[in-house]
Length: 538
Ligand code: F6P
Image (cartoon, rainbow, N blue to C red; front, top):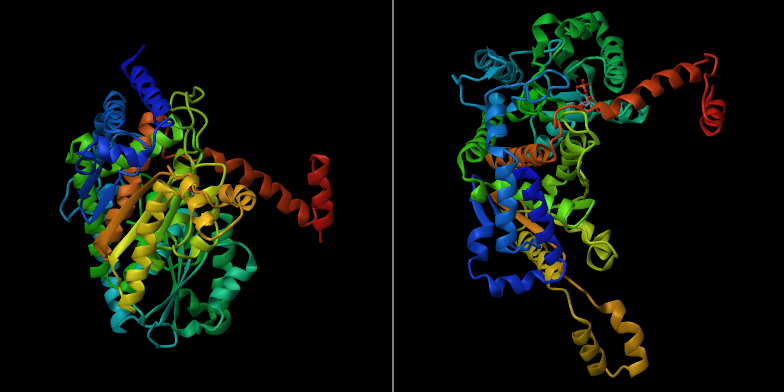
């Protein structure tokens, strides 16, 4: 048996024992629990003490990380080696947030000078737009941006904007992603083409949804401004020639390289709309926060390394305890898009069936992730979180100090975040429920019916991530925390976290069916699909 196989076996044995005990009992038995399972990482505090592992289990998990070669894999990634072999690419998004003058190399080729130049060009454009120096075809300053992109070309910028946007922004930044015509129609509604920039973001510049929406926006500009409307188009792409052929002026195309994966691209020119709408200083601070987390990930020992620890906690639940779903609940309205972002980040990265050598994976890979903002979700799926038949581990993300608004509301928000984590773990035993019902004068027969329904078995795990304030730095560190945690999981599952072959089949069939819906002869389909095609053909 290899060291790695032995370490997995140890983790699985440890997890079996965890089924038989209660998390809260571990605090009594382990006086060092908080000291070991709470880590102060850059910009955030990560508390994993309400996870089901004992300190001995945690040590076994750290041993798994060691045996799985996490440190060496991390160093290979930072060195720009080809950690995405199926696409023959490095995955070097950390180079995008490194301080100016850094010396990153992707597959041996220096990249930092180009990164710095792109950052400077974005900052210059942002300053020109924000000052009114750069104007539209009709001579008016720009007051709105329509950001068109999907997947990694949408989730990150959208999250950043929601998290950091001023209460009264100078620039009205809007997004359109879905090919549903309603999306771009709603986004453009009420905007003046003469004062609107359209930023088309697509790594490939071939994505069906993005190009379809970009065509609508281009037509909207041209209808109002004539051919000069094309001057309102900006593009961000790793295929600049395709963007230029689309009509984007060459000096308004911002590039990034193939070593930036779509779901890791928010740090690149993909963030251009945010750079303009927030200002370059804000975006630079966002990058700096992520870079702080990179430093922590690179240097902290495994047992005090936040991304590694978070990955191990998730693995303990996923592989040790067989839990296929995880919830993420930001107790911060401004972070309500974090679960959407993480759905792509984690599930597109690690929802894999074959390992990096092409063998079937040895064990379960990514959990399904869902969530939304607390406290709203307490009035939706938290019934199931507390009393459903499946145990769903939860990541809570909270912010100590509000960005704005009524301080008393913020205190209520935090009370809810803390209370939910406690309630999930501690529960409320049937004995206590029975005593309460008896004290209320209920008859024994009624108590027998009601008590089980009002009991909380508890023992449901959560992680608690606390930011002091939702600054650009803290947001950068939070996103980088999850990026690295996803990478660590991928290393231990021996999969490639940077490709996404699983999205291809649906795209191919959609192209074929599109032609059929537009009038081509129907091809061979199963009867259900054939009937749908026939029904929808116009
Ligand atoms: O969903 C598949 C995918 O390729 C993602 O990985 C990517 O983020 C998204 O499509 C958008 O791709 P592009 O930036 O090339 O338009």
